[in-house]
Amino acid sequence: MPGIVLLFNGPPTREQQIAAAMLYGGESALITGGEACRIHGLRNVPETGEEIHLLVPHERKLHNYGFVIVERTQRLPRTVHRGGRPLAEITRATLDVCRRQTEVRPVRALMSEVIQRRYSSFERLSHELAQGSQRGSAVPRLVLTELASGQESIAEIDARRVWARSGLPEPMWNKKLYDEAGAYVAKPDAWFDDVGLAWEVDSLSFHLRAVGGFDRTLARNGRYTAAGVLVLQTLPSRLRTEPDKVVAELRAAHAAAAARTRPNVRIAS
Image (tube, rainbow, N blue to C red; front, side):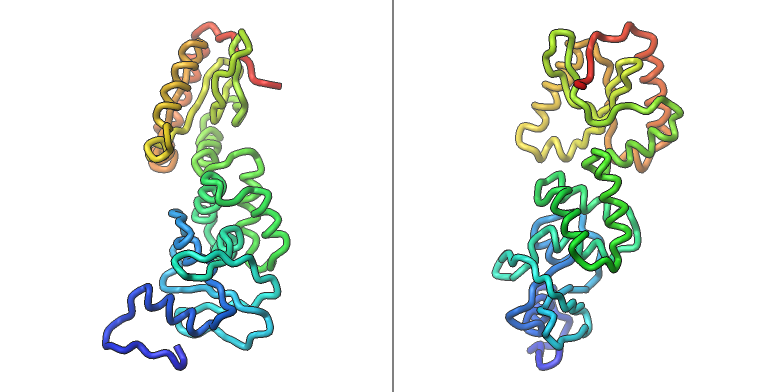
């Protein structure tokens, strides 16, 4: 960076690159985009190479240099400090990296994680997208449209795509299910009401990470069994790696459910 010297021979570390970017940006600069999302603790951050994206007040006369991307803005977001670094709050940081993407999948993955882990919400992301620059907004807008259908994870979006290939009637997505006594059973990812089939897209890594997640899954499956509901469980990774096999399993499960007496359960109106 201009006026910034590395006092040894060899490539800088990532921490040194961040330090150089902040020295270049000055006291009013904030880290945003992919680097900010990683520091905030998000996992599904699109690959941005060495790029470090800074936000600076609009009146600053600062330009891109090397690996530093400078964005002058009249809408500086709230500052969040992590490890002594000034970051854009997570909703803005998420959209700043998503606006620079041309592929839909990495944007789906990041936005879904942000919502699932409750770092932000669909409403805050939508508001920020509407208020901010419209440059590069097409892909995040498409993903928010998908999320607006009630699917709050990339796995459920993938599940809808797999279902569309199955030729089966469209299920109800994310609706609460009750037994004949009115007791809550579960909220299946997809519910085929015609035959009484529940489809759950269960991430093993999520259940192992979440506090009590595995126990809750076992309890849920027990309620399905007690209510007489046939349930198909699918790992989200298989929706992408083995879609044809999942389609075959879904059709077979639907046929098996159709061959049984439909359980006396209902979806809440």
